[in-house]
Length: 140
Length: 482
Image (cartoon, rainbow over all chains, first blue to last red):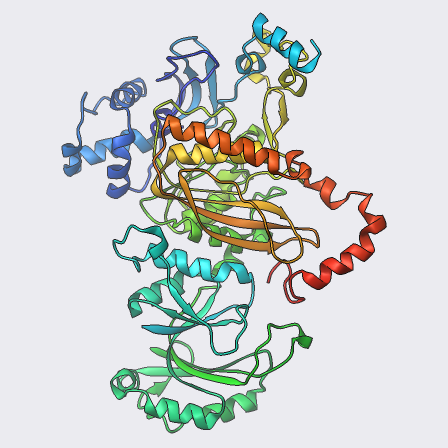
């Protein structure tokens, strides 16, 4: 899982308001080379939550990203290379993503995060819903 | 300038939209942002049926024409027409009358050339072809012939008049065309990427030719990010990656996307097989409850996918069936079983799936980005009075039907995002979705096309009805690949 993906994911359990950014627990991490595309980086830069990217890259052992960034820095080749490296070349193979609000653990195996919610996270179990449902469907 | 565009005689509904999409890709429309202006001018030869392979198209430059033809899958060739006629005499007059400054640069002595004789609707023997070539000696070719790799290729294409008996679109009169080839599709891509030799396949892997057509409709190119929310074995992303786009995919079934059938038989090995750049990420997610952070907007340049229609690989979403009907309280997974728990899923109706896809696309596509996806339809009497899913953020710019069986087809829809997303937009889209849901036939609401295709009740009245259906439905030469 690359940090670009991490920057887009959040814990969407019903009722959670602060599910982003997910904390990274790294068990196995790899660096994979990806073709550099300045155009792609420039297009994606405005969509990135910078602080989350910096923190995530630090937890993967890369601390060369500046704490803050703005679009004027995109003209610098040096900055683009660091941005490219952090965003696309740091790869979490095995680990866990942890929700900052509930502590819910989303496993990452073979580089693929499993974001599927369990049954009790999908449906908020509360008495009101149960009674309403009885009126609608005539069943408990 | 007007060019002769000859198509391969297959996937007829997909031919012009592909050229239109590639024209957009290669900048044929300039800066005009009015979407209805962003389309090409087309003409048919006199008395030709729209299904004919011969079309005339107006393109701004030869470079653009070449780029379009070379990247396409269905364009047999785009030609600068030097002459046309109903007889060889007429053709000769036309060619002689064509301006010299357009002809001489390609007849120069330092260049090499080749003449190809082709025909539509009939076969010409090698001897007949040679005779035709000999008949062109009035054209002052000064260069040398090179059959393998010539600088310039000239085509002499003949088509006769015939009725609809032999199963081809009606063409009323004999016509002969002569032109210089500007560009042509590279069909060698197809045997390279064919599913037959693909490493990792699934039951709904997209056929290579169709995947390339979808990638062209989505304008996949280097620097763009393409997303497939129903990625499966990655067949659509492969086509997008071939054209240089960055790719990303998600699927609700983790076994398909993470495990595959083994360490050398999975989505990654598919990309390896062709030496393509790996997807940036694959994840397991449910489109009904997507894992994106709120506030994430406009990240993808294109969403290209084949959603489940409920026939072979039915769609699923989170939550058990009884759970969603409120019949039981949610099952709480005991802590020690949580890590490998595979959550139960419920059937995901086509209509709901469409709503989620449109909502996702409305949020996550950049302005001007494309949503390309297949939508199943029931075949009525030829003219499809079908209502496609709609969303206030999108404008439908192409719909191409592929007939799958007597009773149903699938249509490739191409939509462009023309309006920005907002909460109000989402609300009005929800309303539209509910209307769509109510007006839809019951068979679609069940998300189960199988019941429409194999409904036993129909076989009684079926025969009389079906012959009626046949007479008014599409002509005989239309089938799955035409």
